[in-house]
Image 1 (cartoon, rainbow, N blue to C red):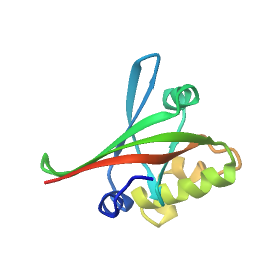
Image 2: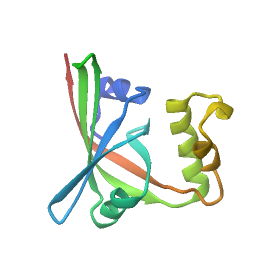
Image 3: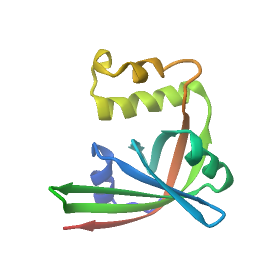
Image 4: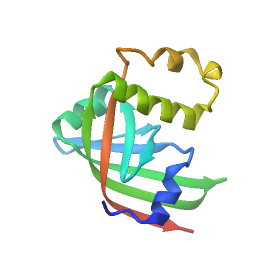
Length: 139
Protein backbone atom coordinates (compact mmCIF):
# COMPACT_ATOMS: atom_id res chain seq x y z
CA UNK A 1 0.00 0.00 0.00
CA UNK A 2 1.24 3.47 -0.90
CA UNK A 3 -1.11 5.86 0.83
CA UNK A 4 -0.04 8.49 3.32
CA UNK A 5 -1.75 9.07 6.64
CA UNK A 6 -2.84 12.50 5.33
CA UNK A 7 -4.51 10.90 2.29
CA UNK A 8 -6.20 8.33 4.55
CA UNK A 9 -7.52 11.15 6.72
CA UNK A 10 -9.03 12.88 3.68
CA UNK A 11 -10.90 9.86 2.36
CA UNK A 12 -11.74 7.84 5.47
CA UNK A 13 -14.90 9.67 6.57
CA UNK A 14 -15.45 12.07 3.69
CA UNK A 15 -19.10 11.95 2.70
CA UNK A 16 -18.16 12.61 -0.91
CA UNK A 17 -18.83 10.94 -4.21
CA UNK A 18 -15.87 9.11 -5.70
CA UNK A 19 -15.44 8.54 -9.42
CA UNK A 20 -14.40 5.02 -10.34
CA UNK A 21 -12.62 4.60 -13.68
CA UNK A 22 -12.44 1.23 -15.40
CA UNK A 23 -11.17 0.40 -18.87
CA UNK A 24 -11.39 -2.41 -21.39
CA UNK A 25 -10.30 -2.47 -25.01
CA UNK A 26 -8.77 1.01 -24.55
CA UNK A 27 -12.23 2.44 -23.78
CA UNK A 28 -12.43 4.16 -20.39
CA UNK A 29 -15.60 4.23 -18.34
CA UNK A 30 -15.98 6.60 -15.37
CA UNK A 31 -18.92 6.51 -12.97
CA UNK A 32 -19.73 8.10 -9.60
CA UNK A 33 -19.89 5.71 -6.65
CA UNK A 34 -20.34 5.69 -2.90
CA UNK A 35 -17.51 4.02 -1.02
CA UNK A 36 -16.07 3.10 2.33
CA UNK A 37 -12.37 2.95 3.15
CA UNK A 38 -10.54 0.63 5.52
CA UNK A 39 -6.84 -0.11 5.96
CA UNK A 40 -5.55 0.55 2.45
CA UNK A 41 -8.62 -0.61 0.55
CA UNK A 42 -11.68 1.11 -0.88
CA UNK A 43 -14.97 -0.81 -1.00
CA UNK A 44 -17.66 -0.10 -3.59
CA UNK A 45 -20.99 -1.76 -4.39
CA UNK A 46 -21.66 -2.05 -8.09
CA UNK A 47 -23.01 -3.99 -11.02
CA UNK A 48 -23.53 -3.38 -14.72
CA UNK A 49 -20.77 -1.98 -16.90
CA UNK A 50 -18.36 -1.22 -14.04
CA UNK A 51 -18.54 -4.82 -12.86
CA UNK A 52 -18.22 -6.22 -16.40
CA UNK A 53 -15.16 -4.06 -17.01
CA UNK A 54 -13.52 -5.11 -13.74
CA UNK A 55 -14.11 -8.76 -14.61
CA UNK A 56 -11.99 -8.21 -17.73
CA UNK A 57 -9.47 -5.72 -16.32
CA UNK A 58 -9.10 -5.33 -12.54
CA UNK A 59 -6.87 -2.24 -12.77
CA UNK A 60 -8.87 0.84 -11.73
CA UNK A 61 -8.50 4.50 -10.80
CA UNK A 62 -10.52 6.48 -8.28
CA UNK A 63 -10.80 10.25 -8.01
CA UNK A 64 -12.22 12.05 -4.96
CA UNK A 65 -12.41 15.81 -4.52
CA UNK A 66 -13.68 18.05 -1.77
CA UNK A 67 -14.67 21.55 -2.84
CA UNK A 68 -16.61 24.49 -1.51
CA UNK A 69 -18.63 26.48 -4.01
CA UNK A 70 -16.51 25.09 -6.85
CA UNK A 71 -13.16 25.84 -5.18
CA UNK A 72 -11.14 22.69 -4.52
CA UNK A 73 -9.95 22.15 -0.95
CA UNK A 74 -8.22 18.88 -1.74
CA UNK A 75 -8.25 16.13 -4.34
CA UNK A 76 -6.87 12.64 -4.44
CA UNK A 77 -6.31 10.14 -7.21
CA UNK A 78 -5.93 6.49 -6.27
CA UNK A 79 -4.69 3.65 -8.48
CA UNK A 80 -5.33 0.06 -7.54
CA UNK A 81 -6.44 -3.44 -8.34
CA UNK A 82 -10.04 -4.56 -7.83
CA UNK A 83 -11.18 -7.88 -6.43
CA UNK A 84 -14.78 -9.02 -6.84
CA UNK A 85 -16.63 -10.46 -3.82
CA UNK A 86 -19.98 -12.21 -4.19
CA UNK A 87 -20.55 -13.52 -0.65
CA UNK A 88 -23.81 -12.01 0.64
CA UNK A 89 -22.57 -11.58 4.21
CA UNK A 90 -19.50 -9.66 3.05
CA UNK A 91 -21.57 -7.54 0.63
CA UNK A 92 -24.11 -6.69 3.35
CA UNK A 93 -21.38 -5.78 5.88
CA UNK A 94 -19.85 -3.34 3.39
CA UNK A 95 -23.29 -2.06 2.36
CA UNK A 96 -24.17 -1.20 5.96
CA UNK A 97 -20.93 0.79 6.35
CA UNK A 98 -21.50 2.62 3.06
CA UNK A 99 -25.18 3.31 3.76
CA UNK A 100 -24.50 4.62 7.28
CA UNK A 101 -21.78 6.90 5.88
CA UNK A 102 -24.05 8.43 3.22
CA UNK A 103 -27.56 7.99 4.65
CA UNK A 104 -26.98 8.21 8.40
CA UNK A 105 -27.28 5.65 11.19
CA UNK A 106 -31.10 5.56 11.35
CA UNK A 107 -31.89 2.60 9.08
CA UNK A 108 -35.62 3.37 9.27
CA UNK A 109 -34.95 6.75 7.61
CA UNK A 110 -33.16 5.14 4.65
CA UNK A 111 -35.05 4.99 1.36
CA UNK A 112 -36.79 1.64 0.90
CA UNK A 113 -34.35 0.46 -1.81
CA UNK A 114 -31.41 0.55 0.61
CA UNK A 115 -33.26 -1.20 3.43
CA UNK A 116 -34.48 -3.93 1.08
CA UNK A 117 -31.06 -4.49 -0.50
CA UNK A 118 -29.68 -6.06 2.68
CA UNK A 119 -30.78 -9.60 1.87
CA UNK A 120 -29.38 -13.09 1.30
CA UNK A 121 -29.27 -12.15 -2.41
CA UNK A 122 -27.97 -8.55 -2.53
CA UNK A 123 -28.65 -6.66 -5.79
CA UNK A 124 -25.04 -5.49 -6.09
CA UNK A 125 -21.58 -6.99 -6.02
CA UNK A 126 -18.79 -5.86 -3.70
CA UNK A 127 -15.60 -4.54 -5.22
CA UNK A 128 -12.54 -4.30 -2.98
CA UNK A 129 -9.88 -2.00 -4.40
CA UNK A 130 -6.42 -2.51 -2.95
CA UNK A 131 -4.75 0.87 -3.29
CA UNK A 132 -1.34 0.75 -4.92
CA UNK A 133 -0.65 4.49 -5.08
CA UNK A 134 -2.20 7.79 -4.10
CA UNK A 135 -1.58 11.30 -5.37
CA UNK A 136 -2.91 14.07 -3.17
CA UNK A 137 -3.19 17.80 -3.77
CA UNK A 138 -4.27 20.19 -1.02
CA UNK A 139 -5.09 23.83 -1.64
